[in-house]
Length: 127
Image (cartoon, rainbow, N blue to C red; front, side):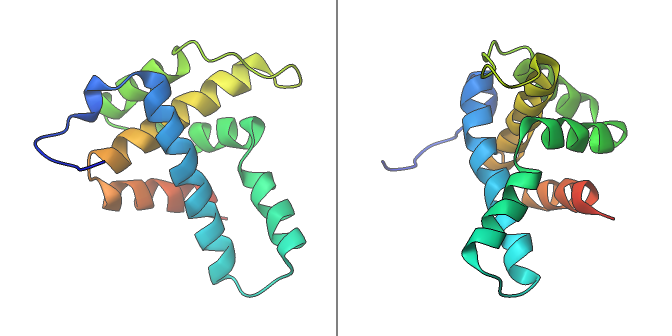
């Protein structure tokens, strides 16, 4: 698909933004783990799952919430309230927060705000 003309990520649904943000977050986690050194694939997968799940992503949102601009908070709320249905084993509150976080990350990525995206991710994973 060719990318042409002006693209406004605000025109996408909250769940479309979350779809992109899920991939972005997963890639950032994998990149971080790879930079820490070579490990068996099974171990890398277990480590990634510790970051990429609804409970961990809800906690990640809580960590960056005070740093968000009004626009970023609005995108997060759109994602949180976007109507995604949690899996049976997921806490609905955590799942909504995780979806909101993913929508925010998808928005930042699609809006070309890569520095901001990386800065927020660094805050999420900071010890």
